[in-house]
Image 1 (spheres, rainbow, N blue to C red):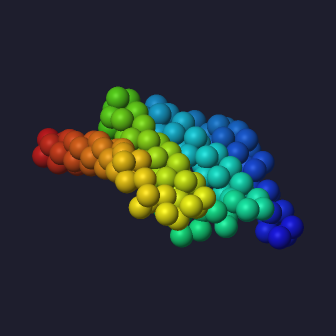
Image 2 (tube, rainbow, N blue to C red):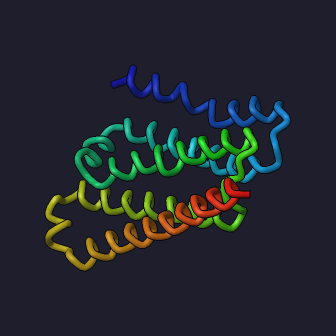
Length: 166
């Protein structure tokens, strides 16, 4: 529908406007890596959301791993980065550069693997059954990415407990 696509397109300028607007503020140094990832996830979320409303796209992604990918993009990617940016702004240290890259890289791997699986599943629902090796590989990538994110999150939690004792 024209109005749905038009409404979604109003989000696109914010991909540029939001970082410029937020760039006027003097942010703590600890928030820099998280803000970069937050804006990356925001742009990815907007572009994937807008393109989902193009003709034929949402029909292919409905009830597949593709919608699961979009929710992971919103929560594991954008919302986690946004909350970590807020925590860093408040002076709470959330990881170091390496662990931040591991977390976001794993989240990106999970979103991409789910997106590919959803696209293939939407083209032919039998794909999940007829191609068990591909399905298993995709779910294996998703599991590996989830395990990396779990290890990083436990490390962050452990470090926060140690810092709380000091």
